[in-house]
Amino acid sequence: MRLHPSLLAAALLLPLAPFAARAQTPGNQTPGNQAPGNQAPGKAAAPSPGPTAAQPPAADDPVVARVDGHEIRMSDVLATAQDVLPAEMRQTPPAMLLQMIPPEAQRQLIERTVTERALTDAARSAGLDKDADVRRRMQRASDQELQQSFLARAVATSVTDSTLRARYEQESGKRQGEEEVHARHILLKTESEAKAALAAVKGGEDFAAVARRLSTDPGSRDGGDLGFFKRSDMVPEFAEAAFAMKPGEVSAAPVQSPFGWHVIKVEARRTAPVPSFEESRQQLRQQMLQEQVDKVVQQVRANAKVEIPGQAAPGAGGSLLDQAAPPAAGGARPAPQRR
Image 1 (cartoon, helix red, strand yellow):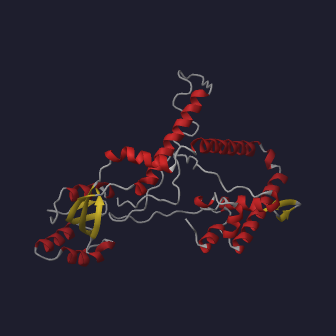
Image 2 (image 1 turned 90 degrees about the horizontal axis):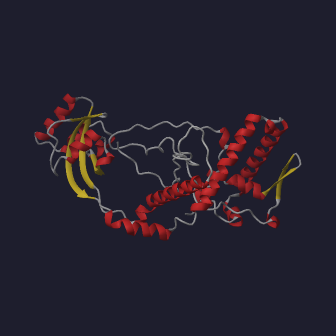
Image 3 (image 1 turned 90 degrees about the vertical axis):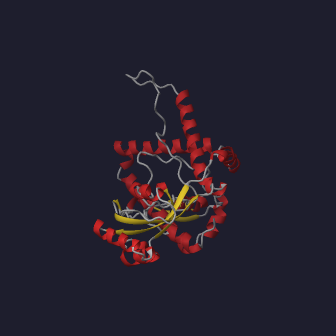
């Protein structure tokens, strides 16, 4: 994936991450519009296989700044860039990466690296590197980095395009397309309003016209058209009613859901095509990474001499990274849900 220079610059000009907390406000949800779900709680992100950008040779690693006499080299600046670079760019060779980063972004990266060095030096001068609580947290961070790096190296060669394709072919016979329904709906706040809309439809008025005139759903301008959706895309009350109907049928009575009262019309039904390899690649990759991480963790636990006082079976039920979950790669995101 190639990034436009302006987009790259925008990423590199982010403020210092540890000091820039960002609030997240959940969006409004309707049956046809829900924000993608967050990662399940309790899941720790496992490493994404693959090295980060290599350090440049010493000859190509000039001093770009000094802070209280301490040299800052271009390799330090590139290390700072790793905090904001997209995942797919972290393996870019340093010389090529420097050509991709606009001059203004390079200047900002140098400023950021200088600030980080000054803060680190100030913390050491204040004796924080000798504080017992700080040292414990630093040790914990060091241990976690070692764990992540160990797992990344252990699984890096096991999940490749060829192994992904082999898994896809192996499971292709089991794959079946999900049933989908194409429906329209009219959403109203009260049952009485929904009954009035239903009476208008049964009286011969066009369903889409009634939806445009009465529905409170943002999709009313499209005649309440929800397109094709799977059962899991909708809240249970709506899905149960829609999937029980035949094409051309209108719900016999308004259907209540957490969003209000719906009058539903089913336009068509179909079986969705089986996802192609390209469409399945990311899901398969996550699945196989998770399997490999679990396998490595179990092997490490099995080879370790573990003693836990009071436990009948030392080492059972634990892992280095409990419920570790591989991260999504390449900026892929879950498809929007409609629940």
